Length: 289
Image (cartoon, rainbow, N blue to C red; front, side, top):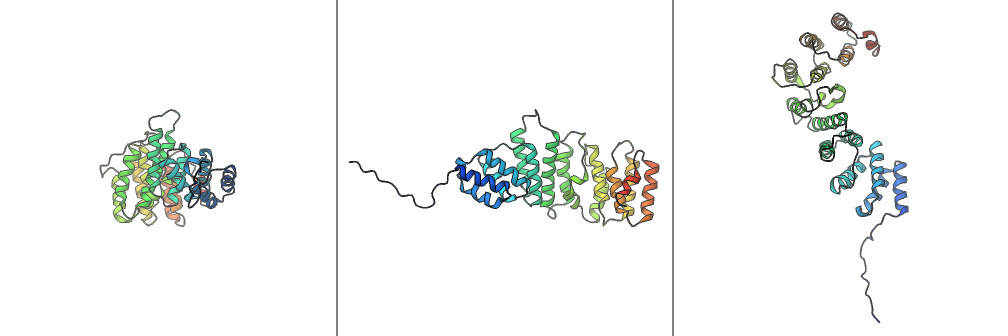
């Protein structure tokens, strides 16, 4: 009789993705028990993982802001194993979450992934998605290096990555760049922004809305004198008469900054009434009434 020796397995036995395990992971995700779901996901060998399930977990954890799950699934199943294909819309959402959760390098990795997967296939892709991904990349850099790099350095990155790259009809809104705006500091930056705005700095700006973006960054600097900001706004309208820009954001900022200062509010209102046409100033001011 032939005797067969059985080797004893020492340590933890291999976990297979049984139907019960799959249902448990899915249930925890749907019930927002992401810590428990992530523990179960980590226990399952990657070769046994159901890709539809892991994609569902990524979507849910991103939606509810569980960065630990997003971080693990992204690096394990997307970057290392290349077993998931992530839609541009979800890439944008992951980038937004990463910035809020101080994962500053993730937006750059996301954009590199986007260019690798979708870069040579323009069919069905939208410039809006690439704009959002580049915006996240810029904001991750601005927030992550807030005190380590100057605004001038950050602005050069903005010009290279967004202004000179995206279509010229892309509209840059100051609300999309809060951390780039916050990186403006001190009197030195006021002189710098002023010189860039009126082309004294000789930096090449390709997109017309980049100018209004920079203007609105100046207008949002509450520590700078309101007289300086109003005079900058007036000069902008005078210098760039043919720009055909949308000034609603600029007006909203100025009306907000002039609250409690009736004289300056009246000055701005009178100047806009005399200079700009087609703006409902009553409705704009009513937002702060």
